[in-house]
Length: 365
Image (tube, rainbow, N blue to C red; front, side, top):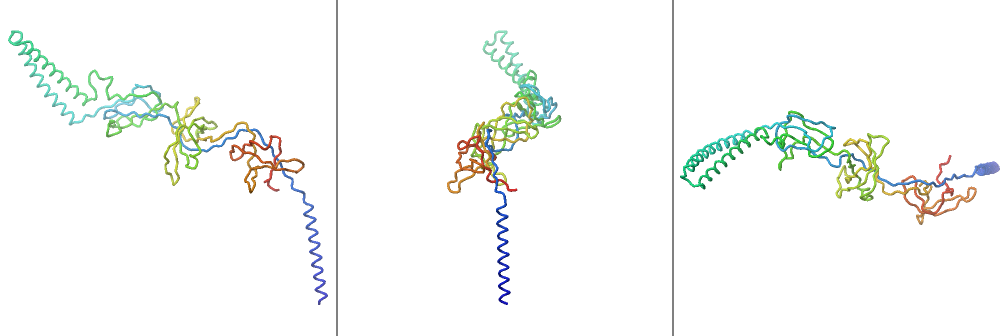
């Protein structure tokens, strides 16, 4: 029995020895790892962040009436170009019954006073012609009569204005004719013939009859997250892309950053604005959705390398690459990095364009 155990042990050891030899042979027979290399190239690199928003006119003017009433006629529609002073709409006044009644009573009172002053003046004139009264008494009666005439005419005009919104001799400046205060494109006419409108005063902002803007002077209005707002500053260039206008971008300049953020779904958003420059002849409609790429840093025509080829020392955290110096032989070279866009990074110092950099993290086949 001891002899059988001994033989079994020897057979097991022989099999294990042969298996180890086979494994070592197969391992030595595998080809060595061949590392690929890449070279740096000359390119422009920009680091940017993106804000979403809309394209709107820089200044939008709302035309409101100075008198309440009903729209009688509308002379413009959205999309029309008009000049300052052009007629937009006409309002038909709905008189206030109380005010009209008061004005009518004032007319009657003024008429009574006018008739009385007329009789007094005619008596004084007769006496003056006979030499009974002095010139001063005659002049006083004449002045009182003329003042009564003026008061009566004024009350008649006031009643006419209450009734119709205008009066004789004031048609050019009548409040019933709504005219444009600026030149530009009509963006919207929210009222129609027959709509009632309210005048603009200290207690009411009034009904908007039309909105106008200079569509040649447009701005980007958007919001930026609090994690990015600290990286931007006024004067940075923006690259605006409009979803409705394919394969075209517009330049803008960042000219406003809100000092106070707005809480949206638990995240602080800061409003920003950028004025479009060199818009050419492209017509951009107000309110179109757009994205603004804010260039935080940019380097033109610099030596750049893929960021995935950069390695970092575990102790010093310094960046370096491995450069080929012979057949599959590499040496370490420290590099100084610049602007990065997440894919390529600027190489300021350490290698040249002709150096072959080891792809140390290549995927094994």
